[in-house]
Length: 305
Image 1 (tube, rainbow, N blue to C red):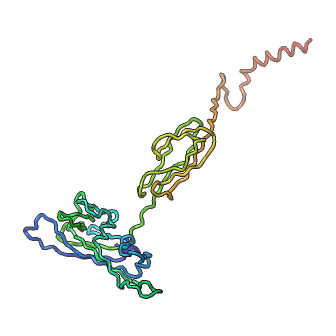
Image 2: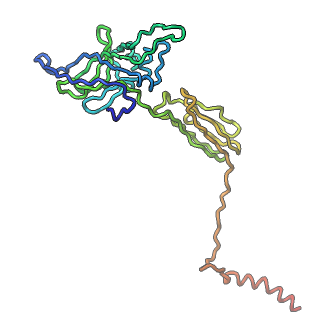
Image 3: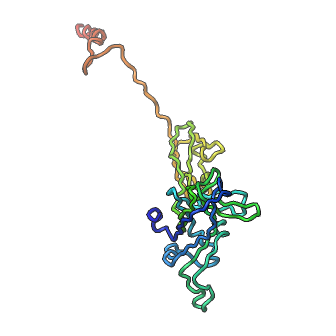
């Protein structure tokens, strides 16, 4: 875990609690209620550029996230490995963590004086209430599962990965893993006058949306048809070239320049072959000899006069 997370790791809790199985428990999974306690020290706060302005307690889970390393050696982040069941009020990782967490600073945030509006905070203690479940997450759930109970309360369950009557897990706070950047791709296109082709645009899986938008497409050079901006049909109207830009709709900074070129058709010359054949690299004089005699004979007769 430490090797995998590197400097992203802030603090971890590890535990191993044995379950005493009673006859009434046979065939049922064990559940262990825990209050996880994490310390975020000054170095971690500084490296994360964490700001204490405003409601900084709500920013804890904007800066860091909750992860688990189960007994199968599998890492899961609550940001992308959580299932919501029972239609809970909190339906995002950030909102459920805010609800299930208490954050305490090592200083009272009173105003010290006019030049020091807040006392410096060098350490945060984060408490998270959760239930550790013995075993693999069943179908329809995830390592992190957030459930609205029948009485209306909401609870966070974390599966430890192995059903062995032991509650073993490593739950930790870390910076969110860097995700792959949002990308967009499209190829330049060359059209012959009157030719129609489809211009295909692809958006990466990591983008927040898959729709795209174009800058104004030049109607002088091409005719654009179709309702899907990711698969417009272009027909060449006029010889020339222009560059347009396509954007990811929800992130306009992610864009691609696409150059469209319209050209005239190149004439195709079909070579013709003669009736005779020639061997080697020289000319075949035999085929032209009778014709040459017809051309030369009148000249000879004129000279004899």
